[in-house]
Length: 137
Image (cartoon, rainbow, N blue to C red; front, side, top):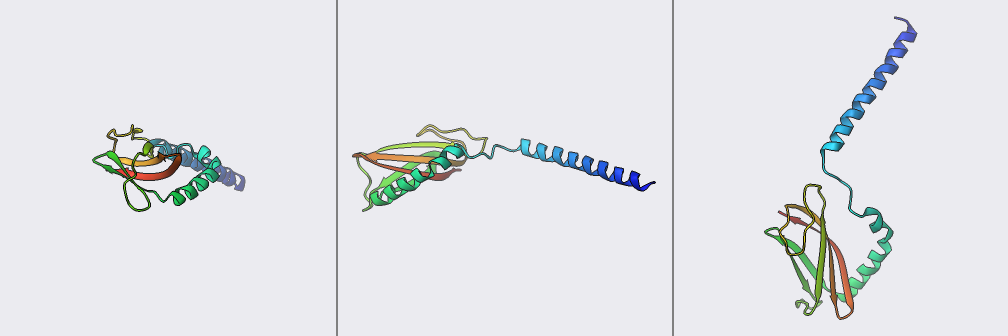
């Protein structure tokens, strides 16, 4: 076998190995759920708004606990002194991180999984917005 033929076989071998690797990577990437963070670009653009809202949340001193109990979301809101917040409006929106779960409607049972939550509390002209992650088991 000539030196030119060896180089030709080496190049063809590398191209075939690259093609096999691409097919394997494509098959693995297509078999899993989506790993894209919902509204990633919008969240990045409004990052300064999140920092500003976080400072307002600290000034208000409200504490929020969000957890799933039997796959139903329970949100507990308390003021700085630890008393439950009266006359507050609480809104929760959430999206599952994995592609196999469905978005939930407030006070509706959800599928097991990890959820990104946005909790908005309004009372007397004040607004508290917080991002949370909660797991429904």
